[in-house]
Length: 336
Image (cartoon, rainbow, N blue to C red; front, side, top):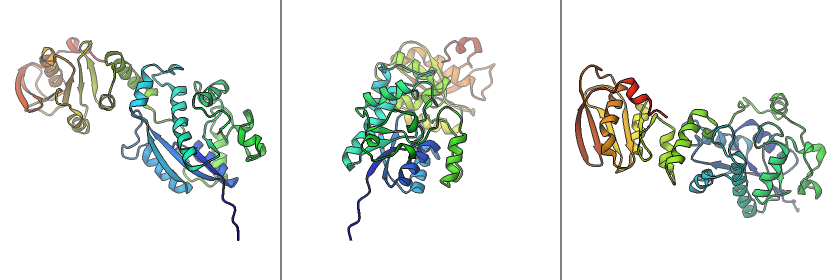
């Protein structure tokens, strides 16, 4: 007996509700869905129950194969000067989405899928989910007519799959705007338990993180993933064009700081008092070693009215600095 093979589609899966609903809608119409998850240096993909855990969990529940694609150096390069600019923070939403769809396109071609779906909702996000932006993303990713957004597709121009009869408009959604009520109702119909809250896991939309990221890209020609990982922790201080200090805020951050330290960095820590690990990075660090040590003491339990010892380590070299804790006006001007 001949069994007709299901037509394949590729879904961009974020772990959020909207992308799950898009998958469910296509499965209901008889498609075999394969998912792609995108990891960048600016998401919490691998941190405990971060977005990576959620995506893997959702993929299992949906019964779809999952491929994870990491956009690292190429993403950082794009972030230097995104063609379509930034959102309210340092988020290059249009360029970012185009890169994600390009990655999904490769997977689509590899497995012989017909088109790509996403959970984007018309008018939900101000920069990247209005009509012209959606068309720009399709053009920039080389996928004109090949991206179906099932939740809003009945409000958008027909795509190639619709024109060819693979999908029908009456089976597509008419969801628009920022209200979550239609999605929550659809989640009930598809029996999706504990639907996740709306919201992205992109650090570039966070105002405080965006300030630190802008400072890094302003002062570093080509930031590394190590530089970006440091942005995610600590208090940041900019001493000059080439030198910055990061001060840990808790035990976990202190351990991360030690793990991220490079051979030319200086690690500082109060010798006899509970407090942070600090990391001094840049060129000609000796000029700022005493200031960095004083700031490190300021955030420790060391007495503020007498000198204490700060251990400074650079590679295998170790020195003890006897210094007073920094006074507030002298160091807050450097805070990023």
